Length: 443
Image (tube, rainbow, N blue to C red):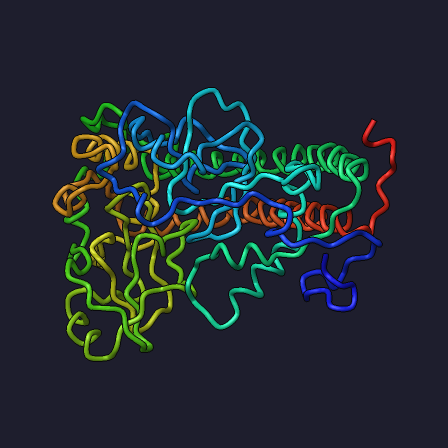
C-alpha cells in the first residue's frame, strides 16, 4: 500500500480516505512478448480473433474490424488469450486507450500493442478500473511518464507502478452504476448534437452540389451534360477536365528525405482536415538542404488546391492558405489553377461536390480496396466550368449561405466540448471521492 504522505502527483486531488495500491500488487498484467511478434503475413480471413488498438471503439471492441490469426498463433501464448470482462489498454501509438471485453464469443488474442489486465482476488472490479482509467487520474499518470520523451510507448514496468485508489467493493459498484447511468445520459445528448452537425454538413454539401452543377439561376436554359450522375447543366457552361483549369497538376515527392531537425515541413494527406490544409505538431521536419531539393517540384504556395490521392482520405481537398517552407509527399496532389480560367476556391468546391466525389470513388474502387487514384485520373476528372464572373457570384452565394451554418456548428461544437468536459470531471470526481456517490446506486 502506498503511504498517504507520499502520494504520486496523479493522486494529488484524491479526496477520500481510500487505500492506495499499485497495479503490480493488484493486477494480472500481460502483453505479447517480442518473440511472439506478428507480421501482416500472419493475418488471415479465418481463425482466432486478433485485437489491436484500432479495434477499440467507445470503450469496447469492434469485433467486425479485427484481424484473424491461426489457431497455432492463438495457442502460442496462453497468457494473452482473452476472457469476458478483461480490460485492455493500448501501449503504443495513442497510449492509454481502454476497452472492456464484452460479448466475446470466439477465441481471441492480442497484438503487441495492447495489454490485457484482470484484478487479482477481490481487490477491485474491471468495471471500476475502466472508469478510473477514463479519469483525469490516469491521464495525469500518462503525462508524467511522457515527460522528456517523444516516444509513444507505455512500458509494462511503468504501468505496474501506477498507483490508484481502491474503495470497498460496495463503493466501487455504486461508483460504476452511477457513472454508467450519468455518462449514458451525457453521451445521448452529445450524440444528438453531433447528429445536428451532420445534418448541417449535409445541407452544406447539398448547397455546394446544387451551385456547382446547376448554377444560381433556375430560369437559365439547360442542356444534357452527358454525364449520368450529373444530368442537366446550364447551357452556357463547358464540360471539361480539371487539368484544363490548371496551369499544373502534380503530386508530392515519391522519395521523401529522412526526418531531420529543421524549420521545413513535409506534409501528407493527414494535413487535410475538415476542408483545411493545416500544420500539426507532429509534422515531419527536414533540413534546409532537403527542402531545397524538393522546393521546385513539390512545394505548395497559397492558392494551390491540395487533394489527397492515397488511402482512406482520397478525395479530401483544401485551398492552401498562408504557409511557407512546406513541401508535400506523394499522398497529396497539387493543383495550381489557371487564374484566367477559374478560382482556386471554386475548383475546391467542385472537388468536394457529390458529383466529383462520386467520380473519384468510382475510379478509386477500380484499383484497390484501400482507395487511391493516380495523378492522371485526377487531372482528367470531370469539371463543369462556368464563366469566371459567374464563379465569383457562386462563391459569394456560398459564403453567405454558409455563414449561419458555420455559426450554428460552432455553437454545437462548443456545447459538445462543455458536455465532454463535464463528463470527464464527473468521472474524476467520482473515482477520487470528491463526489459522494449515494450507496443506493449499487442496488
